[in-house]
Length: 309
Length: 240
Image (cartoon, rainbow over all chains, first blue to last red; front, side, top):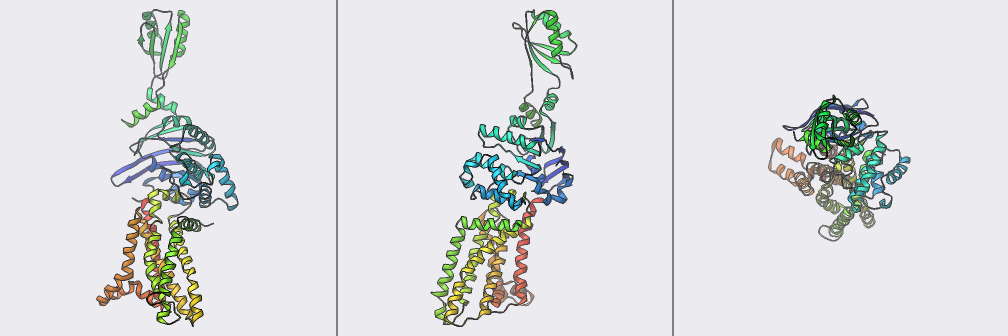
């Protein structure tokens, strides 16, 4: 089930929380929703799930408008809200049964779905405990289990790995990737490596507007513009190497980093890669290519550049 | 299973799990039993096989107990954030409000069912007016429904349970005492209006054994207004 967001806006009094954003998420895609606090991520998610009304624009889920069919579309959405609110006085099994009944799971299938979720989310050992007795990590698993209990076509997860230990984080990421093969997943997080590890596409939102939309690779290219590589060439004289590098057609500029060890920072021309030319040059001149390291812009830097203006 | 019933069942279970239901039942039966059988205008003092003293005591105990039961219904969900969880499932605002209402109404019904032992005992010591007893119970149920809807509305406008309790008690106070007292001081249309709004007049009319359509309309309409306002209070989040 695809999600289409069309010119979506939401205002709280004079403050614009979401400002005419448009994007699409397809079935089998995991979208990472990034942005600083107060950027409008949770507001957008709340509008998609039908918890708060749409200001302007529209959200189409499977081609149907949330404005008109909001109550009906809720059945197809699994939602893990921010801070993972739960009924702490309920035992896990009762809580999942309650959620399954509310989401309209057939009576004869409820128990099998509950058992499946308990197994998938690793709640077997704790299943008879009250939610209030669980650690934060286990509570997060219960939150995920309730979101998936009715096998929804769409999953909206607001910071799903908060409070989990590193082992649990790996497990949950793996689980989300598995689920994401068949379903439409929107995942919001502050943990940037998580987005790279889990998501097919990244959407960065700042002050209610989309400031970046693409794969991690695309964003890196957009952020750096030209290819950047670090090289170290052995068996040559520094000045000769520098002159030869500057003559290569694919290189825009070569900056010496260390004259003794012949280390250079190579900036390629826009849309070109200089790696092949560098290799060929070393072969022709009989130099040894000691190091050739492409420099990637970290996602953190891209995020900071885009959100700190 | 219908969402209203699923919500009502969970809420009723939560009343019993948190001991609120047991405390309420013990206090309600304790108070009503004490004043029906042992103190004041009790059955032996009056010397009649009548449940009038029980209905009068319940009239006051429910006035205090119902806000205590309803104060958490929506305020707690708002405070813990579970309201977001509920309303993003296949549940409408109306179903949530009615489900919560139903849970408290069922708890009151259970409490009143326990008092049937009074009816059986009193009917064994003298001739009892069955019509009066039935009307008395109907009156208590109508009053409870009305106060639950008021309490639910109070709980929907805040996330603080104490505020919800006091707010419900304040609104109830108008229907319970203030409208009636003011109606006696005023004449003309204002007096008639306040007299019509006073719960006491309608309740007394019913427990006398007369089930007037005007009284039924009064209780049902105020209950519906309370439920509608609670729903509006929830749906307000879409526009704010």
